[in-house]
Image (cartoon, rainbow, N blue to C red; front, side, top):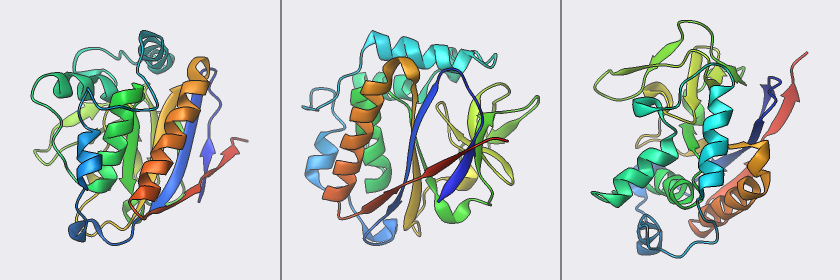
Length: 214
């Protein structure tokens, strides 16, 4: 897979595809993966104030305000893990949530088959918004870095679109780890661990090729 990456002064992004050993309706997260959804679990990456600040600065670049309900997804995971605890959803999402929780970097997991080519990553245009949950709630993504397909923005470091989320029939996903140039080392470590976790789930991954904009 490949997609176009629009120029951005701060963005550092790792993207890869994953092929699962079966569709998600047949897969269950093993105990070791569910353990990683806990704050106290041992992990080879560690969230920090430096990472949190770099991600917020990245999202502000286009005029988006990453605060309140619009803050980065990794911050929501941390709050949930600190209060009610993170619940297991499915192996594909759990692996991403575990890496995001411990690294502090937002992660998107989308169903490849729901994407309408071509794809690109860039700032969402004025008035752009999408439904992000089954209740039909929308997020205004104007000025926010997003993955776009032919139907519009569908994933970002805050929320992913309902139309491209994983479901029972999902077998192949596109995974994006959102980072900033200032924390590239942390990004690369998190992405490497992410792929290791997926390999433990008997999934195969392949890097995505980025194409610069003309």
